[in-house]
Image 1 (cartoon, helix red, strand yellow):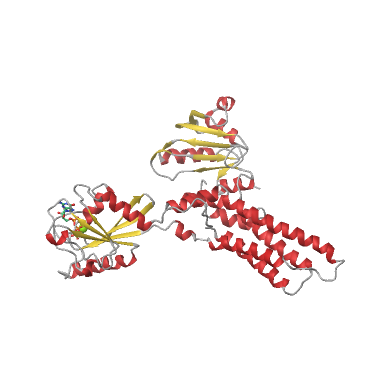
Image 2: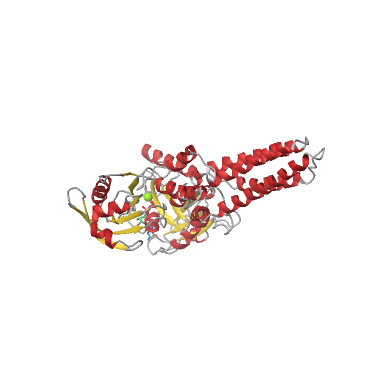
Length: 452
Ligand SMILES: Nc1nc2c(ncn2[C@@H]2O[C@H](COP(=O)(O)OP(=O)(O)OP(=O)(O)O)[C@@H](O)[C@H]2O)c(=O)[nH]1
Ligand SMILES: [Mg+2]
């Protein structure tokens, strides 16, 4: 294992109140001496925040006044000596700090995922937990995040360990049988089939829980549509709480569809405001705008029809596709038509009266959108796997059991069965990384971000 000292920023390169960098490895105390002076090392206490002035080790130039915390091995994320630095969040400062720390002999820039890789190699977490660190960072909604936290806490590790233990038991009993088999002419396999099948069921249940990572970070799309001037752009502004989109009393104000990001309780969504769809296009540009509105509407996970409640009622053609109908401008006088908006028989969509002026109905609209776009959080014990690698290992395990089941029917030599069960156990052990290869580690951690 390469035990060089590594450094990387933990926060993205942008302006913020505070940024964070991490140094890990055997030379951490030397780094502290070089950046803050020998005295700082004498006074150093593990896990205690210190305020210091960081200077360039060669030039002595002040880089920043900042907080830092030293973690003594093995009580750190990586299990090594670790230093976390919290400078002001100016990219110039972060660059200078990185450059200064890298200039110290024995220190190099960390590779993606290298801290977590070291945490795994030092026994701080197993591979299912290491992989879930990336899920915790990238989950775009609450259900995925909660699952990632369950994975990180080792829930899957425990399930796998239990399964591997059961397979080990079976193997041990089979091996006992090997000894007996020398005396007996025919091994007695009654009862074994059921044992294999039970384990197969448990592994299959885990395998079926697989959800691809593409789902993990997919941001759902809600599209607002309706007649020109219905109040769509105003509604987007009201939902965002800021004057982002152009609004005017002239129908046809929005030409191109515009996408914004909105945070709901369950996670972030893409919210698209479209050009109003009129019964007839006034010119070529108008026709193009309407065509684009209809195209994006096709992709929507949630279609929200906006109807001016002070104007005409929507035709059934308007609302056939809608998941939600918003009667806008509820602060204005309602027209008779809008007061009896839809034929209650035919309407399955949710109807909400809202005003972008007074804020009426906005909270209800957000709640309704949230419920439609995000599944209610799962039960505490629900768990699904998101790693293709773990999925492949489970498939290997099932293939091994299937081969064992196949063998059973042919009254095999007991060694053959024991051999297959060994393979099943190894497949399970490679999920948690009890057995792992350099190639596997390489492919897992290469997908991480720098600094994690
Ligand atoms: N009183 C009142 N007026 C509103 C409300 N929402 C929008 N309006 C007015 O309705 C007009 C049209 O609003 P927009 O938000 O531009 O409507 P739109 O649906 O985006 O229109 P197009 O982009 O042309 O399709 C503007 O004059 C708004 O000020 C509301 O809740 N109450
Ligand atoms: Mg508009």
